Every structure is written in structure tokens, then in C-alpha cells.
Length: 202
Image 1 (cartoon, rainbow, N blue to C red):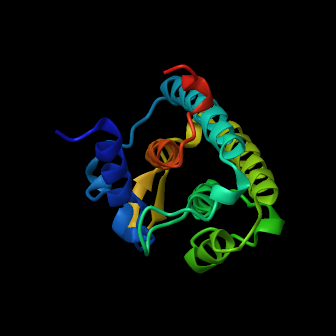
Image 2: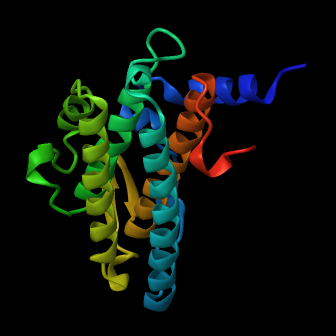
């Protein structure tokens, strides 16, 4: 019988390979309704901010709990290492909001729709402390960008990854992306003997 850890790691491996950005996105989004009321959009934004805050706390907790000498660990050749997965999260924290019109931190050199710049950013070889600092900045930018998006704009359509989405769909996708990589990082941590800080004793 498969252990839960093996199953979790296998699931993480399926989502961890560095595929082209467009290949990771859902299809058919343009067919969904775009008439989003201001009040509903405001509630969605508040809920997403709460969710992002919770994911941020866990991702940052893992980044700090994993020893520096484990940042180069990867479950298989060609799959992102722990450090690379963390930098990928930071890169997309900039890329997705920038792609819908928010100016990213100039230090990141990431601009909306510039996937090569995002890839270059996440491929930088940084030590543990520098990686944690980049993550912190990227989450601050992400939260600021969502807070600055007026509810009235949530029904607007934008082009992203060669498809059309509403701003609301884009922010939801941004948040689910964080959950995808949180699951990956939990499996990575467990595989290297690190217990997630919120699961101590479990």
C-alpha cells in the first residue's frame, strides 16, 4: 500500500516540472460570465486577501524551517529544487499581477507578459536568506496589488497566457497557484525530514 508521503510526493512531481507557462493554465475561461457586481467583487477580493495571507504564512514558515543545505535538494533530475520552487512562487507573485497592469518591483525586472524575465528571475542562484527576502517582497507586492484593484474592475477582461480572463478569474488563478506550490513544498519538506511548523507533533 502506498504511504501518504509517497502519494503526496508523486502528486507534487506531476506539478513541479518547469512547463511553459501557457501549458499550466486552464482552458475555456473566456466562456465564463464576466458580469461581476462591485459588492460581490469586493467580497471576493477580501476573501482572497485572507487566503493569500494564510498561504504566505505557511510558505514563509517552510522557507525558514528548511535548512540552507537542503535548498538544492530536488526529488528527481529536471524537477525544481526547493530553492527553485520558492523562487518560482516569488516570480509568479510578480508576473501575474504585472500581467494585468500592476507595475512590479523594478528590482525584479519582471514586466507584464514577459515570461522570459520571470524565468530569469526564478533561475537566479540565491542563498537561503536571500531567497526568503525575495519571497517576503513578492508577497508584499502581491497583497498591495490585489488591495489596489478596484472592485469595479473585477469584471474587466484581460489577455493572459494567450487566453482571455476576467480580473476576478486572474486573481483566483493567482491564489490557486500559491496553493499548488504550497502542497509541493510540504511534500518537499517532509521528504527532507522537515515537519511543517504548523504540524509540529503531527
